[in-house]
Image 1 (cartoon, rainbow, N blue to C red):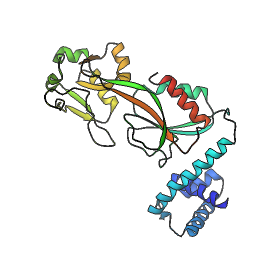
Image 2: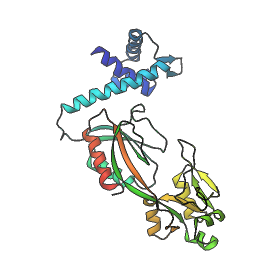
Image 3: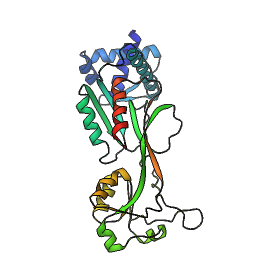
Image 4: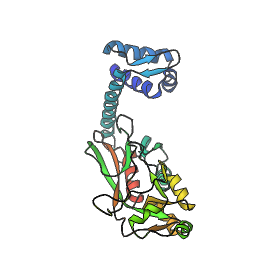
Length: 294
C-alpha cells in the first residue's frame, strides 16, 4: 500500500511539475513530497525527474513510468467504482477533449452542468490528436473514420459537409454551377493541426480520378475564422452542416453545389477500454448522445 501512495504522489508531481503545489494539495510539506519521490526513485533504481533550482521535468524513464502508473490508478478507480452503487450521483472531476466546432457543444455542456453540479468539468477544446490514457483524459470526442485503437466508443451521430458563401459574395462573384468553376472563386481552406494536411472538399473528379485543384486563397486551422470570412463575403468555405445550419436558416449563408457534395462524417465519443463507465462519464455520454447531432 505504501507503494501505491508513492505512485499517487509521483503522478501528481508529474502532472503539476512541482513539489510545493502538490504539497499544498495534500496538506503536507514539500520536503515530504520530495522524499516520497526520492524513495520511489531509489526503489526503482532510476531517476524519474530532471531537477534544477527552477525547473522540474520528467526523464525518459519517468515518461514511461507515468503512463504505466496512470493505468494502475485507473484500474484502482474502476475497482472502487464496482464496489459502489451504479446509481450513485455523478460527482468528481471529469476531463474531456472535444473538437473546436463552434456552437455545437455549448448547449449540452450547460445542460450537463445544471443537472450534475457535483461534477467538476475540465474541457480541452482542440483538433489535435490526443492520447486518451497518456494525456489523462476520461474521454475524447472526435470525427472521422476511427482506427482500431482499443478504445470503447459510442456513435453520437452523422453530419454532411456543405459548401457555403454569403449572398453578397455570390452577387459579386456568381454561383459556381460545377466543381470546375470553383477554380475561379475565393476558397477558404482548413488545415488539420495534427497532420498539416488540407481538408479535402467533398467534390467528385472532373477529369480522370482527381477532384479539381482549388485556389488556396486562405488556409488556416480555425473554424471560427472561416465562418467569419464567409459571413462577410470573403469567399466559399467547406463546413459541417451543423455549424452552417443557424447561418443558413437566417439567410446569412447559402449553399452551392449541393448535388456534388454528398459525403458524410461521423462523430464519436471514446474512452479507455480498461475503465468501467463511472456515473459522471455515463451521464456525460448520455447527454451528448441525446443532444449532439440528435
